[in-house]
Length: 207
Image (cartoon, rainbow, N blue to C red; front, side, top):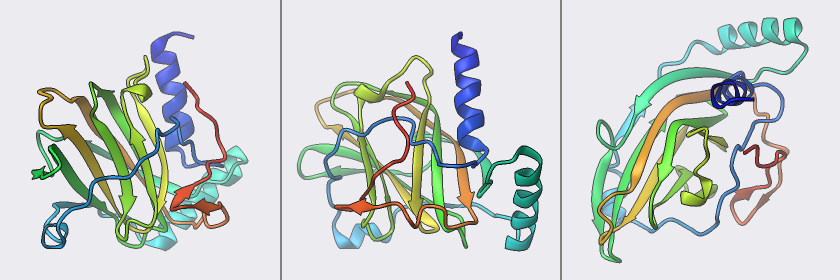
């Protein structure tokens, strides 16, 4: 299977919102650096306009009946990166931090796929919910793959935050582009166990 075919397979499995959601890559652990309370409320947020719940359920039911698998999410195209969205701040521990919120009102959870993911050096990325009770990451250069994409598991709630940390002494962090966000209209992850704020994924590394 060549690189293009592999990318298409991963995207189809992840973005259809079917069955158990792909985590895509195994995280490296750790926790994101904390912000001052006064800064948390000023993180820029992108709002995604979703369809009414009744319409989403109807569309999902039709897909489920046709393809014999559970559809629980609707996907929305984005092209978001640190150059066109979010904000950079300086952390006193010697890091530059890029932050961006993504909100889709009414979502049971949100999933993200990075259409471009290639980190360099000691840069690391986290995704967490509004209360920081669920944290995915760190994702680092250990997660770089030949496909250049990173599908990430759903995080509960209708607002999530992307958090990229780059050591101040490091000039380049690589490249990341958020290409898709999945709005889950069914609470399919409620039965997954949470340990220390982290989901125990039901899927393995697909690299």
